[in-house]
Length: 115
Image (cartoon, rainbow, N blue to C red; front, side, top):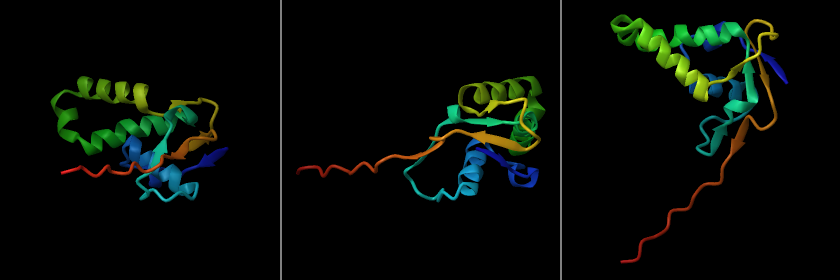
């Protein structure tokens, strides 16, 4: 499924914030503690990936001022390990979502300790 997400909804978002936006657009309740995202099941247009760099610079300006190369590398590594993948064929500000991107885990019941 392809979904257009306007830049204004994505500006200033972390990767998790981005995933939350997508989940909400799909009709999910992001306040549900059981919600989980599978970063292997979402692709983004190149401009969305570039927006992540802008967003992280806005979120952590001191890191980018102190050492821009190091901060940029940190964002790159984070995106490589837990960020969405790029699909260069997607239209601007479009995501492609595979089934299973949003899942829910069962709540773990706390075991009562015996005294």
